[in-house]
Length: 328
Image (cartoon, rainbow, N blue to C red):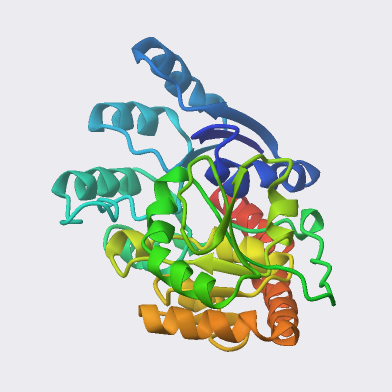
């Protein structure tokens, strides 16, 4: 079986978690995988899209193409699998209005041209089924072998609330500054760690700013005592696939999150962490975990078991392979 994977980029998180980490497993099961970044320029696109006839399956990650390119792709490709992990049919959370006729049309065309669609969560699946029924939910999985469990300290050290992500999402965290300021006034052992490529400051709490690197990613998450994943309650946020939460739980770090989108599916409130909506709820739930190291450990370990069972690469790689096998 020969598959061409067209991805956003070899160093893009979505490509790493939704495509690249599957490759060793697929190779073990007879799949000859070729990975390319999306071609740029007319002639580069023409060359790649004409070549897809050499493969049994063309796997397209997230990208939507204009109608003319889609017709060429559909004419050349034997089978097309389309994978996406964001609410690409809507505008993002920074817009007042999330509705976009152009985005919906391009998404519909992309889905209709595909033989199978892989959606990152249930919300994305529901937005796909009006256009086609061959839709499978596969989350952005965690290769647990790269995520050893956190070593829990018995000392009364500083307590670190942590957030990891791309600069495009840090606005969710920045809106929580009043919460961090309030908590920092009450506890001088509290720290906020941001792992990103852009940062902000607070007056009443120490902010540790760590530039994201792939090599240091897991160690940075292990340094958290409490993971954070705030979201807005809007169509774009509902499409998020909860990678930040999965990464934290994978190493045994409990989380406090907004109960929006997949956050509600991953985190059982009071078991793997807490849900929080209002500023008061965020302060209340964070204080509970700040003051109870044993609870942090219990919730973190329960979260790790949940990731292993439902959200690990080991649990989801066979499901991906099965889709390919059924298509051909």
